[in-house]
Length: 211
Image 1 (cartoon, one colour):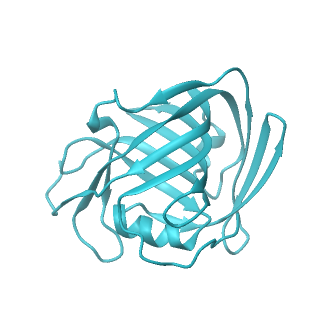
Image 2 (cartoon, helix red, strand yellow):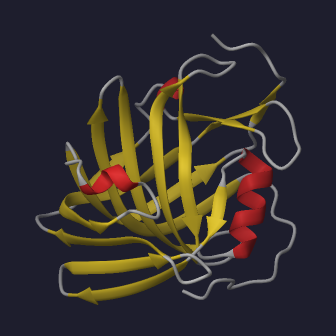
């Protein structure tokens, strides 16, 4: 998708996004990690692509919560409003996709052309419906420090519904995004052929001392 599909305009929360992609879960010492590769076909700022790395738990004013650590998107509008609305530290990147049958490859590059990541995945098997409704709120509430001169924290209980199917992920290169991914093996990898994701108005919490 182009790096900026719509003009940068006012796009406050809540957001509902529709799309598809891939989720891979990793187990590391004392933490869990999630790699998400998504193609949004519809959002308040138009279609865009996204690659993110989130880990949990992290200390926050609400207690241990997941947090987005690295993220790039293909839309300047998504960068601006993701940072402003929820404290998500988005940067801009270009996504180049190749799809053939059940195999998908994507190369993600910075605006200066530096390769950030090169991923490939294959889908297999049937899809099943899935929802985050049974998941306790603390496990799906992002806790992000405010960005760009703002203070405090933004707590966002994200919800999702869609379909998933088994997939196999190969991380060909991730040196410019999160280098350890080339050495890690996911505990679970799922393709997401159908997704509806909701980002509500976050709870804003002032600065507090964290343990």
